[in-house]
Length: 243
Image (tube, rainbow, N blue to C red):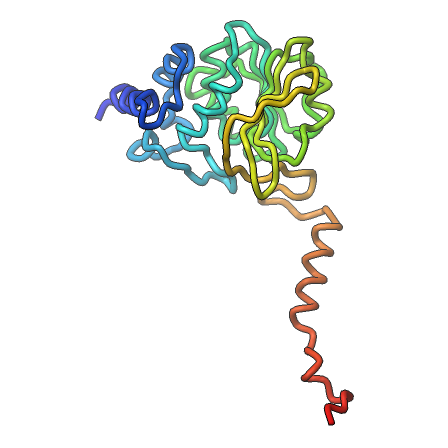
């Protein structure tokens, strides 16, 4: 089937009141235009409302991406930073809305950065800047940003990202740990929660997929837990006189 028809069907389902994920014309128009199959790689399922796995990361389902985009509510020509670009689909939709030269994207995984660059170029958005950075640091060289989208969960808004917002800017992110909510963080620190979600936690240097782990605290915690699991229990010890 023609991918354009599949995109229309996908967006129609997201606009329908049963889902209601897409409410604005600019998000609907952009999602009808961006070829999602360029980012997912499987034309048969690219337009189904489901997640995909790619290079150790999760490609958001269209409905989840739409919720983030609607919360972000970018205007034409806004300067936008995407933190956790992944394979680049959400970045491409934003480029369609605000213009590719106004979108900057970062990811901590260098392999994903290369993948996002290729996918964006193949889809016609090669002017988007994609760089390998620790998301918690943002991209201060091009700040301030009218909109920042963080596609990973954190217990609190990263201070560097808040500092890189324009005076009337907004940061959209999944806020929380076990219980998360898509949240809009204003430049003055005010937070609006828009509903529950479930995102992977934000990675720090040394925790990303496909790399050697260098975060000693996490590694040691796991090693100690493994040792405890292998240690003999009290009733197994020879020196305890149970009588």
